[in-house]
Amino acid sequence: MAKINWKPGNMIYPLPAVMVSCGTEPKNYNIITIAWTGTICTNPPMTYISIRPNRHSYDIIKETGEFVINLTTESLVKATDYCGVKSGRDIDKFKVMHLTPSQGVEVKAPLIEESPVNIECKVKEIITLGSHDMFMAEVVAVNVDDDYLDEHGKFHLDQTSPICYSHGSYFGLGNKLGTFGYSVAKKKTKKRKKKVAPFFSILFFALLMDITITSTKHMIIMELKLISKMRYRSCPFPSILE
Image (cartoon, rainbow, N blue to C red; front, side, top):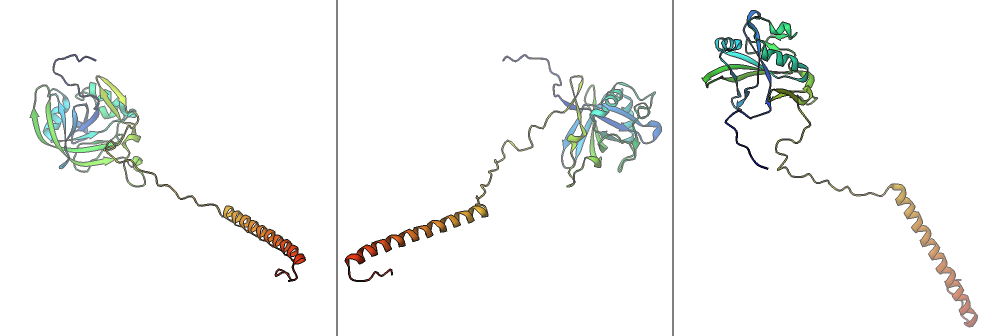
């Protein structure tokens, strides 16, 4: 298999396709779909989004200093695409796509109620890169849909049917192939259970042994009596068994 050299470019796919909501009041609420996003730090939790300066949401986020990353699902794929190709300068994307804005906890930017996970962010730094500017932000709150929590409080994102973006297309996720660290985890050995004979089997065996022993005793006694009688005929002394 030979390798072909291409010119430098972004080939890191698939990527999350998220809907980023912004604005501080209903009249300037907007949604922009972004694939250039991800985690940049665990503690403190930090993320980023990269936006072209000519996009309508660019100025809103730059002025307000906050936004919400809303994860997308298969049921939201049409809205996800629409909010990425249409500008919010002249239309209300919430209204057109029948999405519900709801109040966040730490930011004034709206959450998208139909999204299973809403990540509230506050901008810390804007880095000019070239075609895009990167908005580095701190995660200040996370909201999840309790329909996907189990009895132990664990959130199951896979049950939401999340989507991803790759080379101009949207895809659902496939089957789980493993969990973090499974490649080095020790294999669990099954403990052998001690086989315990059932009660009736033990009882039958005991009865069988008792019958066998009794029969053997009876046969021995009979033989001894027979021998004694034979000896008695030839000997004047009485048999000890009589």
